[in-house]
Image (cartoon, rainbow, N blue to C red; front, side, top):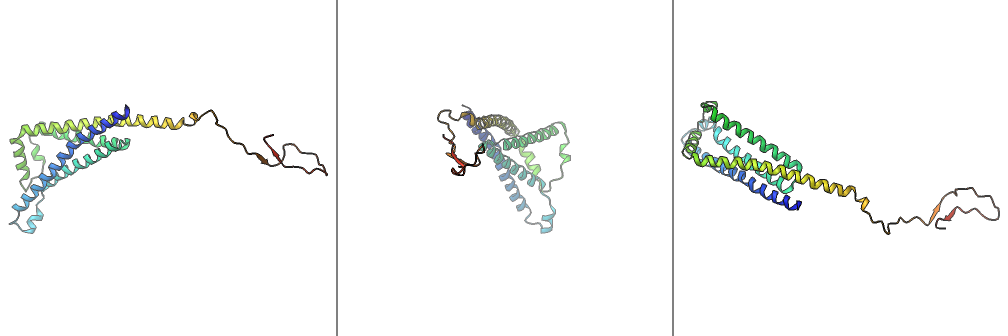
Length: 220
């Protein structure tokens, strides 16, 4: 029964973890599309002007997508192996990501001038993305809720899977400790050697006719 519960938790954790992977791949593809658009806009510029521009928003967007994909791979490995160290590391990364997302959301909600804290985007992709999010705010709101819910559920499932895995490992350890106590009592005999070679326990009297024997049968 415990093994069935562990298998179900592994499947649920993989399914929820897949949501972050889909989001990460979507962000990477969107970032590649933004790079293509930016390169098309920079075709008339010189090479020095091209190198002087820092497309921080595009690179940050792709970096967040790659981070989501790496966390997805880590979660998949942790769920498949049910290793305590991998699950603990996955929970730590997920909790840190949740704290970072909460801090960013709180700063956007409480600070009306949060855009001034960011550097200027020379590519203009940040302004276009912000405009796109505002025009589809309801859709992005539900996407954000799904992402946060998947991350919280993944952390809880990893915690439960780690607890069940440690209990199962503890029962296996106990089986190994008490293995010697479960040996069969019937026909459990240790074969003693038939003859023992060595000095006799008592010194024999010297008999010039009969030589002293240093080997005797222990079965007598």
